[in-house]
Length: 187
Image 1 (cartoon, one colour):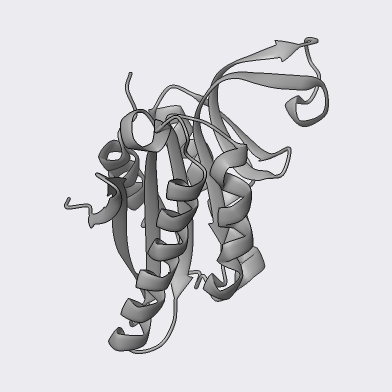
Image 2 (cartoon, one colour; image 1 turned 120 degrees about the vertical axis):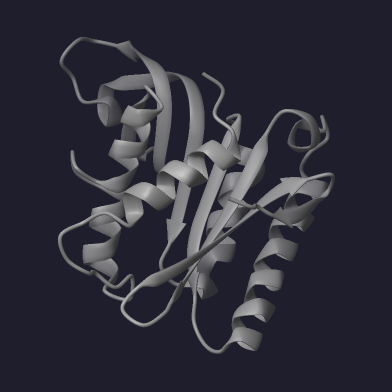
């Protein structure tokens, strides 16, 4: 099953909106746990729907989706297994001001058909738009500087997801890197 940015984002939206109670992503630890860690986290559910395995904290990455693992039976993947056929790499940053470090790590050190970056924007519409453009520019510059084989133009897709806090709910926006720039992903 090919995992497109649109398919990932559609499942992400459905799963992230589920839940018994409202948790603001401003409550960093609770939100990050809900999104990334544990058997019932959002990423685990997305991986299940895509018929993939999920691993939180794989090497220095926040998460990966993979098809198989190599190693010894019944041992924890993070210490004694190596994922094979990594399909999705996930980087999550609650505070957009520190996202640059995650971007520099992700490009070009790790490869997978889909790279997903999730962060959140604060402030009024103008400030959020300015920060979104700044983050997109950092990613575009890294891809242009570190893509000698043109993998990000042809094979690797990058999905950038922004959350912004509304009244008792999070508003989501997604962009996909195509043709040397980010374009809004329509659902």
